Every structure is written in C-alpha cells, then in structure tokens.
Length: 329
Ligand SMILES: [Zn+2]
Image 1 (cartoon, rainbow, N blue to C red):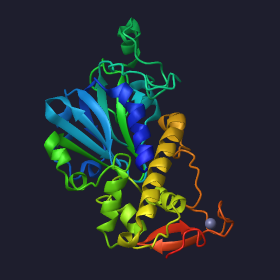
Image 2 (image 1 turned 30 degrees about the vertical axis):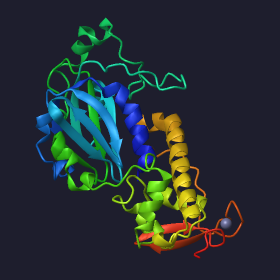
Image 3 (image 1 turned 120 degrees about the vertical axis):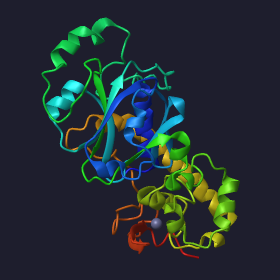
C-alpha cells in the first residue's frame, strides 16, 4: 500500500511527462473506479494539465479552467504513461481508465542530482523533443488497424496515461477544482508531515487523547502516513504505539516529529532511485525496497538493543515495536 513517499515519488516522476499536455479523451473501463466522482471524467477532455502534485496520499492534477482530478492508488493502483502501441499490444485487463494525451510536456527545470531522469517519460524514452520523430511516420503504423478494447480515437495521440488497478480499490475523482478540493476525504486532511513545524506538531499531539499509533494513521491528524512509516517513526522516536498522545513529553514529541520527517525524506530519496521499477511494470512490480527496522519484523532482534521485535494489533492494524526501547511509560 503506497504511503506518502511512494505517492510523492510517483508525482515527481510523472509531472515532467504530463505538465503542459492536454487530455484528448477519457475512457472508463471500470465504473467503480470513478464512483463518487463529482463529475463525469469527460469533463477533463480538452483540458490542459497545469500541475501534478500530492496531498496526503492523493495524487492531484490541476487543469486549466479550474478543473482538477484526484487519484488514490489504494492497494494496487498504478498510474503511468505508455505509448499507444504498447498499450494495444499488452491489452492489459487490469487497466481501468485511459486518458489520451496530446501535445508535448513543458520541460521542467531539472531537479538536482543531474541523473538525467527528470525529463524521462514513463516508458523510459528520452524527453519528448520538438523533433519530427513524433510526426506522421509513427502515426501511420498505429492508426486505424489497432484492435482491442481501447478505442483510442485520433491518430495524433501517441501516448496514454493509464490507471491500472488489479484489485479495483483505487479511485479517481474529476470535476471543478473546488469540487475536488472540497471532497470530504481531501478537505478534512490534516497538515502535511513534511511541512508542519515541530511546535505545531507538539501542540496537535497535546490536544489529542488517542493512542499514538492510531493518531499517526488518522489522515485528519496528519496526512500521508500509513502503517509502515507510522511504525518506523515510533520505533525511531522510541515511543510505544499505545502511548497516550496528550501525555507525550515535549522532548519526545520533538523526537517523533524529527523521526517522521527524516524517515519520509529518506524514503522519498530511495523512491527516486527506484521509481523506474514502478514505471516499468513487468508483472512482478512492487513498491520500492524499504529499509525497515520495526514493521513486519516480529521476533527479529531490535537493531538497537537486540530484544525481539513484538507485534500488536492496534485498531485492526498490525503494529510492530521493540518492547525494550519503546517502553509505555
Ligand atoms: Zn530495542
């Protein structure tokens, strides 16, 4: 299940190949994917993508004319760009939505590091150049002869944005920007963990009577953490998952805030180096290798004190912690 760092990595990888391009048409292949969308996805046809950003675990597209789209990947959702030829050849039954893309992405300033990945399109081609190679020659080989369930109108559209989702829990919402931002689940999101200050975080903790683990999972308290990074942050901060939030001493609150930011930041960097595996799904695709110290390590020795990691169930979620380093004062 993707959490903030994975969603952020997807956004950073997709933005360069999508920003500035228009949606030519939208095809919905599974109705439940757009259940709850304020408007029919067709409302995005002809609109230009101005920005791709992340809010909590949502991927949010801003379109011209004050339109927007929000995507939640949930369990198995995947968002990426592929050439029309490849989509037709693969005839992938797990594709739930298709967006025909028009035009060329607006080059974004390079994002440091100089690895050259910034401008890559999702299928690993070099960034689209204003060269004649995207012209008629390609169109001839792909035009009307293409069969399959993807109708793909318009020979000029060479690339498709796909929403693929094996288990169909993912959701896509389309509509006017205020409708999308006003969706209950988005409107109620708490602050971004990478943005909130230590003081504001401590203040929020003090105001809550809940247990730390449940609170960190609560998207209205903090947006973007899930089961994995919540456990890892509590382990790093040496705080018991069942500790009462309002009783956490100020020094511990500061430690938890720092741990959350450090762990998320590290995971985003790791995601940046392995996002290609995500964008080139080959059937075995999973999320990035995560360096986990608590999550899923029941019985294994704690990396700090060697005590065996324990597993608890908190609010129906498996929770891993070190009983020796994470004492419940
Ligand atoms: Zn320990």
